[in-house]
Image (cartoon, rainbow over all chains, first blue to last red):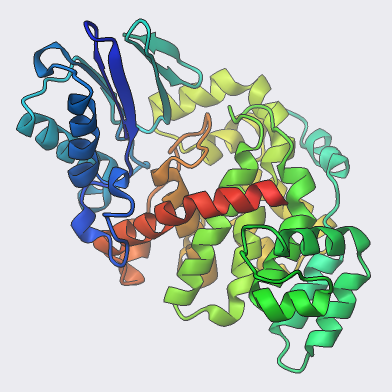
Length: 132
Length: 283
């Protein structure tokens, strides 16, 4: 699951790629070592790092891509969906709105952020590129 | 539809897997074999011996002394690692190539292969298949070998395949079969036959997406399938086929695997990804 955030005034932004919704379900893996792998530990750590650099919450542009699932991947096993739900809950807690999202389905996506312009790009093979 | 004999004829363009790969698997699984037999087998292949020593002396293993013989290497890094390094060295040349058609960048098929082999090794241990761990590791490593040849036909027919997948709910391998007349599982199995892989290895390659119902009953094939879908969920070098394969929750349920277990395996793999990437670059 990918998230980009960008503050157009300060020109500061960042990109986060996490894999799982909940560090509490990662048997044997210490989330303190790999906080950015999980939504619940990664998103706060990511945002706090950006806040420390002076970004302002009310100016942040948030773009979200990913959360795909395998064909017939049912509710309990649908980790992509769980990632998206966890991401949204975490963004809500920080009072952040999503500016644009390209999520779900079975496509894999490549997300990137051009830091100078604040433009995010979401590429899907065979379907071209979306720039926001 | 493409002429299937055209496709099969191109198997010869691959770099054959050297016999040492099959021989070392057989020796590693044979309780009567000795370490010196295995060392001797490796020494017969100078290129693999050289790469093995280089890898064992790299920061990846972090040994505090220099290893200068195959016997030492086995002693210091362990037989399991040595067998895996020989297997990786045996297939690397093919997998480092960039296949057409699947939207994969340079080295991405290789990264996917090695990561799923790593996951399959974790799974083999968890599901009491430690004895077959080298077979399962090899099968996970080689499962997509058919893509190396089928890719150019996929590239040619991509739009047709994409329509079946996006509008008609086909899985990517079913769409390959319908449009091209053959999918990468079947072609991979043919490569295995041509190169005299064991029947079981060919079977796993042939059914690693579990379209065939009886394959879903086979634990080794299911473990390789699971390793593959875990890599898909992690987004490890997923290409144009993305996640368009079938998920069989009944297979996971029968194996007693919950979504929490699945998340734990993904976390364990994610934590090791840097280490896996280091290894990729050494081979």
